[in-house]
Amino acid sequence: MIKTIKLLATVAVAALVSAPAMADYPEKDIRVVVPWGAGGGTDGIVRKLTTIAEKNIGASMYVENIEGGISATGVSQVMKARPDGYTIGALTYDSVVTVPWQGLLPTYKMDKLKLIGRVTSEPDAIIVASDTPYQSIDELVAAAKEKPGEIKIGIQNIGSRLHLAVLQLQEETGTEFKIIAYPGGAAPQKEAILSDEVDVVATSLGDFASLIENGDVRGLVEFSDTPNPTFSDVQTAKDAGLDLRMGSFIVFAAPADTPDETITKLEAAYKQALESDEFQEWVANVGVTPNWLGTSEVTGWADETSAKLFEQMDALVEQGVISK
Image (cartoon, one colour):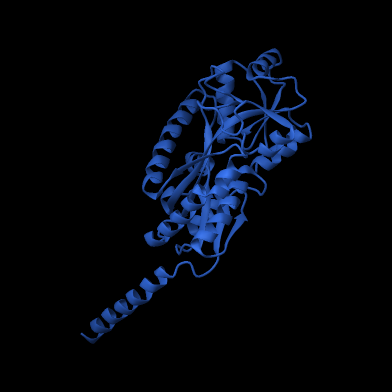
């Protein structure tokens, strides 16, 4: 009886202590993991949003780049972190689709995360160096047909979304490119095209916004239905007569057992940051579309998206186009 009373007293005290503690969140710095290298498009967007979000949440937030494993290394650290709201991470297409589908890490399970919200969507594109003769996707396709396997195109990782996009482009247009992988995000691709290692890259317009604005490269086509709000002169896949649609996104996530009250505060901070004039004016110049989905919707969207793409990739495996 005495033991029971002591146990109940302990539980009661814990409840009294935990409630104010949750109300006081955050009480220390919040770590935001970007599972790609510094300097890429995802890194830039997350840093900008986080700089604004920390003003809303009332605590310092710092971004840490953890590369490797097609984003799996960084995301795995978020999965293993204490579920207290002080470690969160940014997920991209590869985090939600490529890594789970390939089964690269047996311990990597999406149910170890609680999704906070989607902040952007970003169609993939074909970009060429400004000194190449290609002025349209039709001209690039024609050249690739004349020189099968000779035109070098830089992607980010073998088996990634961009690899899949190029394979689908080849299949749809009857072309063959020499595909070269540059793991680690968009930064190595930038180095490759600026140093003339490749003439063409598959990535997003947002990732290469600064190089487009400087005139170092130009976009030929974006795999979307609607014109890019920043680079409206780049042809859409729809207007080019292509069926291919492909792109990435950024979703914030926390460890699965993070309290709902904490998730709500993080969600509100990032939503407010996304809708701020500061971010809207900034993002209008980087070729990325703000595209919010809150906590109540984003998990269902991610599950549906990954299931659809798993099916498509399984079909390509059966056809011998890619291997798992």
